[in-house]
Image 1 (cartoon, rainbow, N blue to C red):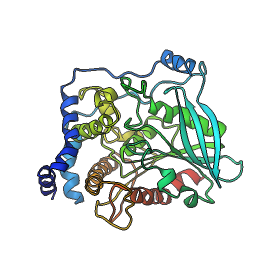
Image 2 (cartoon, helix red, strand yellow):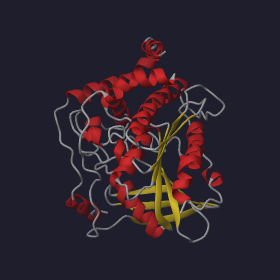
Image 3 (tube, rainbow, N blue to C red):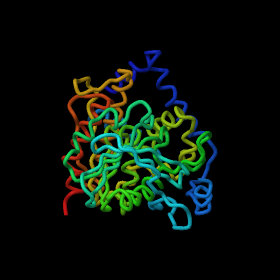
Image 4 (cartoon, rainbow, N blue to C red):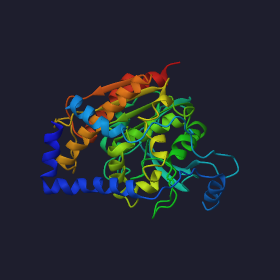
Length: 376
């Protein structure tokens, strides 16, 4: 089945064009000179503040997902440390939209950026847990939780805040080893792992119990961030994500993601020999999520009434969901073998659309996140 699908893709000119970026990305990262991963130094942070078919597809792609280089025996968890010597992350402005929905601007010193978020607030002033939702490839420019899902309706009456982030297009929500050619420093992992949890607790009634979930591009990074910052997140979810980000498949996907927004995969984690690739791959660092509540879900790629197509390309959302299925199943099997308790859900129909993302969020909340966040 996978072979037939590949032949169909290659034989169709429009489809070949869409896949050209993946091939170019693999060639780019495999031929680049070696670089070394860097973490943001305290001086850099100071400067920023001062400047204010499942089995078949899964088994076949599994070899491409994990067969590139040997596993790393040890790695440093976490990114740049936050100290009180500079302007900390804080709420800049809150704007009431309607009902229990707010728009909240939060300053991130690691990115030197004011990030807009949509917040569904629980009633009252009592401390409550938080769910952080990341957007997909476009950072919410075209599709976003606040526009394409009914978060206020679904979470009404739940004692939880739900914050959906705007921004981060093409960044993989990680800390880049090089600056973005146009946007400068990229440090989303530090922002989401260290800065945001403090703001939620200190300024938005948080109780210190948080979950982080991502869709599509951000599914894998959500798992990575939860593992890198175990004190910040008790639960995490990948919703139609790609939670295997090294190997040939991962290099191609990262190239497609970054090059569509002005960067390169080398800017993110260096060339393919750089240990940062596996250090940020949830499938290669599964042990970090032992003891955490973990949800991984996807659909089959089969069209269905669940799909919210908007202006999506039917071919692209079909093949994307099938790729997510292969990556997700590969991660699930590896994580469970490594002692991680993964709740795994496959929707019988649906493509890479917000209808599927929203349905998977409901599954994640009801099977995994609610118990982790609301239980004593």
